[in-house]
Image (cartoon, rainbow, N blue to C red; front, side, top):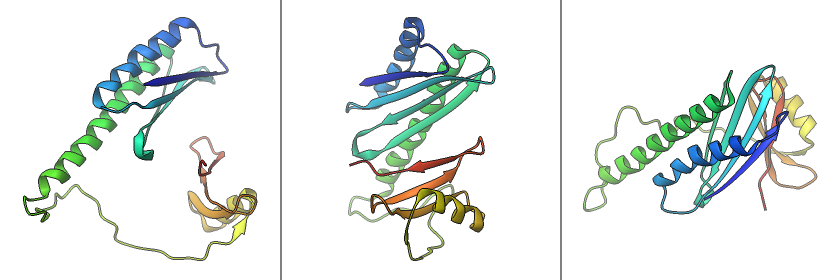
Length: 172
């Protein structure tokens, strides 16, 4: 496991880094394979924010963000949040395996599982990210998929909780 700890508007002390490694390190018990954890510590308007992203094999991501008045408490809370998500994910995988019978037939499905109930198809034209944000706002959506005119790859722009926008680009 590799843990990358960064600070934003805060200096990451050895004590903070050690606490992150101790708490996030406990998550390793859920996985057989090696993974990377990217942890960003920041201070925003007096609130201590911890954003943690786990990059698992197969491209799976697990992410959690927590803010509280204390940085150490935020680290503890984000670890608990990640553990809940991982347990939920592992439970679903195990449930799916149990649903498959000995002959490969699916068993009965559970009510709490969601399914795709609608499919939309639309043409994707190349555009700049700023144009995609404008299009997203015109449609009154929270995200918008487009082909980036510069890279010719599919990108997603989305509205963040703080009112700003985010851009998701595929990694090579």
